[in-house]
Length: 392
Ligand SMILES: *Cc1c(COP(=O)(O)O)cnc(C)c1O
Picture 1: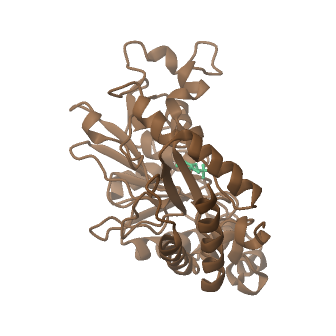
Picture 2: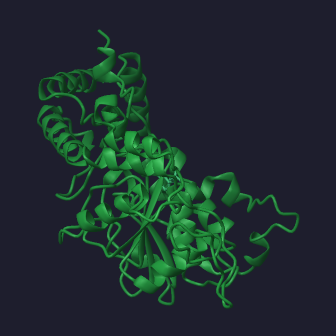
């Protein structure tokens, strides 16, 4: 028996399921206005509307829309006014974009080992740590380290999640970064948001993201005598318009993920050799994470699920200390920048050289949750998963 394509394979992730011409009033308005540059009009731009909406929804004072989450992470780091070669502690298990954002800013990423839930283990951080990026992977909320001046939340995979105290993820540290890449909770193809509670920090971010200027909408940029150089990370009106449309569906996606999780948990077989990693109340977990007794059992599950047409993935590719860029300290610069500044900086922080984490990764299997499915379809998907796991 193989699964119905729609139930087994998440052919369109999350927000992409809700792209529909009948629901694109903002995009239509942006096109009809014939202005796709956010600073061309003196009336409120789509990008400003988006930023205002996110500020209200997340209860955060300052928001800046950029092209993607990698840029948002870079901008957050740059706004801390680091020295080139400064260390940024990052989770050992996350997407390589985090390391790329650090390196392309002239800083040195040091991967820090993770706990059983793959969240950065703050007890490994040195007491003088200045900059830490915490990633909320697959919508599982990770705790933030205390006593670190610059904690940047990578919430690329966790839009809509909240901490146990109710604060939305991304709003509890120095700055938070979100992604609207196709595979994330909401999508505009590419897209990013940066949030911070500090007005002065936001002003630095806004200037850097627009060639170093604090542009007045409708005007050519002017430069202060004390301006510093910047880049161009300014978002586009049609992208902001699609993001506004996507936000209308966030609540439904979050609810649909929670419902699918509940249904799947009720259907999981009681096997002592397969355990489900827990889901916290505020998580926007996009997958069921199963931990198997052995790598052999995990690999057998991958084979059988795949044969049945049931989507699944593993997290082994996220182990950054084994990524060639970190392992080989590689760079396109002729002098190896910024790795040439890394002398004396540890390659990673781990008690056991990542042996435990590697073992956890080798035994972990993720099965996507599909919020767009109806309740009865989710029940069918959960039953097919149970049947397959029972046969292992
Ligand atoms: C996707 C992702 C990023 C990068 O986001 P982009 O918008 O594609 O630049 C960064 N961190 C994590 C954890 C991600 O999953």
